[in-house]
Image 1 (tube, rainbow, N blue to C red):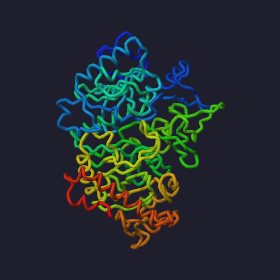
Image 2 (image 1 turned 90 degrees about the horizontal axis):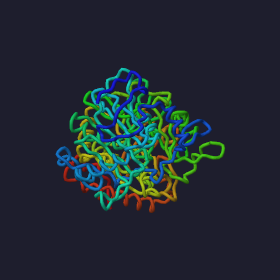
Image 3 (image 1 turned 30 degrees about the vertical axis):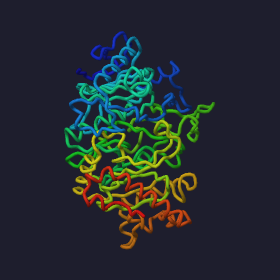
Image 4 (image 1 turned 180 degrees about the vertical axis):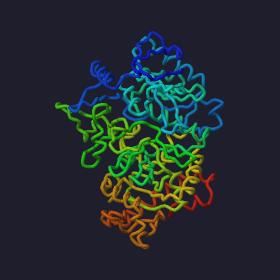
Length: 536
């Protein structure tokens, strides 16, 4: 399927190659037209700032237990099968695909041709076929948009049908909702859920398989930004740990907020053309760049709007995972194109619900490998279906739900690149201080920003030779002093005011680290294993 983008909205296309017939096809519509369709059809409403707000329905977060990969000759011996990557037979996919196509026949659909990866050598051309107009807006916002006269051959197709529900007894899957990736047919089918994040994470999962296997490129669940002098920093972390917030900094150029590749030439490149930010408790004072990016063309999800059309960002009646998507150029200070140099600093972000990890600490190479493979954080309420309050969690490579290969494949690639680039690696706790969840409080954003800025500027290393002391449980290099941060904040033990309770909880978490790492220990050498914390 070849397309030439001279006049995007005047092209007519057919979906008969997919078996879709008798449909009204809205192809590459402008966001303005899609806004009008959503309002006229009551798929969404406009805020007092003319931003479209929609409700994704039953699912306001991903449903990772309902994600499958077709087991075939391409994937059978390469995918890390288990609870995260659940295998499904080709005949089950074929049956569901046929059903979802029949469901779409005769309906009005929204089709968009777009692509992933800012690097031309890694570009993946996509077609999204959506049942909802606002899902098409999401595709426009989150993926890269072809230029006019751009010749376009479709490689992968994503089909989103929130109103199609599977029959678990007949269809061979657990629930009515599903997301299934077929690498042989290069198709992703999503049914029973309107949560738009399933679309982007499906494509991310595809890239996490093909880039390492076919191109020896490391895919990463991280955000990235660049200083005026070209120094790049990357931020690993799961949803809710601060990737988008901390990488969106008016003093640095944003490369991207969630998904990147690290190629063999030392370049960091964005997979996406937009940002997908959490907006619960969003304020201009704390996150001005994101706040100002919520303008006409953006897509708000699952927010509460008052009678005056104003968004109540503090209201979590629908979900704690309320979000907004917008094109990356809605951020004023962006890197163009979305490509940066070898990183000088890597930050592992974690929202420690136990409140025992230091707010920032410097890692040696062994600890860097250990903590990357561990990927400790807490699942924050709303980011996944069924998670109502924070739960301690280990997610390999800070992105296991999207990683089809064994975590050690990505870890070994990262370790090699970290050594080659002589990068500094930091563990940053954006979670709780002064006690665990329910007792302590969330680390203040202004302090986290100050610590990260001090790390990037070299101030943490330059203050004096004795600025670091070793944490007695986690063996981490913990700074004693940081500009613009109270000294007491730097020591989690001091914020508790109860050494007995603090160390009891710290050793409990250290034991959880060691227990979790047992499944990786057979493939980890002594250098990596030496990065483990102490246990009692």
